[in-house]
Structures are given as structure tokens and as C-alpha cells.
Length: 109
Image 1 (cartoon, one colour):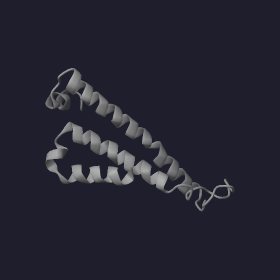
Image 2: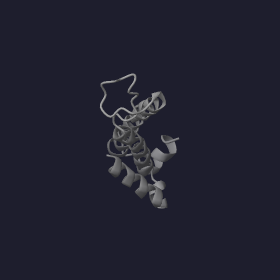
Image 3: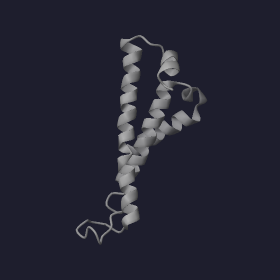
Image 4: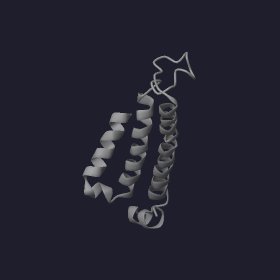
């Protein structure tokens, strides 16, 4: 997930043409949230405070690192939100025959 989302971020940020399209901006934000959330999962149990959770394997963190990991995990809701935006984009584009320009002008702001 982290590698795929990072690649999408790279592709969109490096191409000025892609940054102009609503679809790619939605993918960019969804992928950014996914990268941050994936980083929280990559850290696994390392940030957990071993004094508060002595049975947790590989716990070497403190309260600050534990709170940071919780913050990263909460950002996963941003991924869900932008997934919903992407669904709305396709609904307007396919079902209601809106143009990408109309979506960018009326909905995106």
C-alpha cells in the first residue's frame, strides 16, 4: 500500500498536466493519506510504551511515539473520505453526464 500510494503521489506531483485534473487531485490526496496511514502501520508495535503495555512485542516507545502512531492511524479516515469523493466524481461523470470541467468548477471548491 505504501509503495503503490507513493508511486501515485510521485506520478501526479511530477506531471503538471495531471495536477490540472480533478481526478488526479483526488487520487493525490487519497494516496497522501494512505502513505501516512501506511507509515503508522509499518511502525507496528514499536511506538508503544512498554511500561503501559508490558505484553506488547517489540514495544520500545514512549507516550509521545504512541500518540503519534495513533494520530497516523486516525488519518486513515482521510483515505475513506477521498475514496467517497472519487465515487462521487464517477457518479457525476458517468450517471449524470457532467464534464470534468463542470465538476471542477461547481463541486471541487
